[in-house]
Picture (cartoon, rainbow, N blue to C red):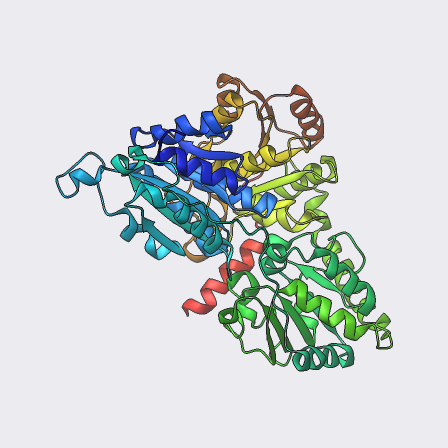
Length: 555
């Protein structure tokens, strides 16, 4: 056997973890890794900006449940990736990033792209380390994947100076640690399980809210069985959207949490996306049963009446065994209340979603897209009022990993990376990136990446010629004449840009033209951009809620 270099060991360790792709942008500090990827059969997906490399790694985790890997060069390569790492950190999304680094032999000499990268990234990663011994690279890779997936998942960062990466390691000197394919499922204390079941089954208006913790625990089947046995309605959120089909009669409508008297909170962090667990989204008098693998998230922002530390999947299994011995509770009245709420909300939004106005109402665009897509299509949502305000609430997710959106960081520009990862993970499914014209401008050059790697992703732009959500807030607070720095060029032809990059493009200015354009885009077999002119005036309820929430806390 011959000696191998540190770069070979790094890629061999990735392969043992089941890594199929790295998301990267080239740099001299990465050359040994690229060479090893070619030898080991790991695909190099080279993007146009390091932020997207990080977003794609996080998108891979969202689409598959397994950490993605980004590889970026030293200095500006690392700093360009900061937004992607921060998004993954605040969203609790596991990923592993490798950063290049200037030679160890030139430390503190002012070498090319030399900086203290670990100290920069420590606040936005779970773990950040420099590897100084090439023989220990496999050890650090194993630790990185383990830490990224433990407790509340998140990004980790490891780096290696180029001279260490190039160093030869003698046969047998490096040790590859065993890869554990599963995370231990901790259950809750039996007395707490019985207490929680008693509370839920005796309540008049119980409800379940299931979030990202359920996604990482792969507990969707247990959730479906639990709902079937108890007749308790459910709302899914964050990465767990679709864990219970959102078009099912037992799926609770938006706003239902405010009506519940007992809530089972499964793997949910009660941050601003959940109104901090407080009014108006949650009633003051409601009792909360919180279940989370991370004990620090129980009682976060709102105290738990019953707190159970454990895997949401395992806790559900425990509850199911207890409930099987109980008599089913009649919840006809409660479900009738929720049905009335759903009907009322549908009627209130009907005018917008069935609008005949010109330019196209952004809600009408959302409806046309949702009606067109296959039932198993994957959608990456990237934007404010158009995608997050009008489309996200209307679209009905049917399985986990169908809707890929940013977490509480609200990071625009993530959609092209998320869509890229989704198409690589699920090449046979429709993948749509639902974008605003503002977000397209952040990472729209990734359509070049799609073309080069033959990824027929369709980008749908809700083009209102502005940074819609922020402009609406500014108008409400200060008036139209104070909306500076928020207006983009109207009717800009982003579709022509995608055509110039080698993709397919269409500009649409009527509601009737949306579905035919989408059909042609998907049928083209190329990356595509459907650029739809929409009315800039309508304001979604999501935008209104966020504005009121911030105004209330700022007063």
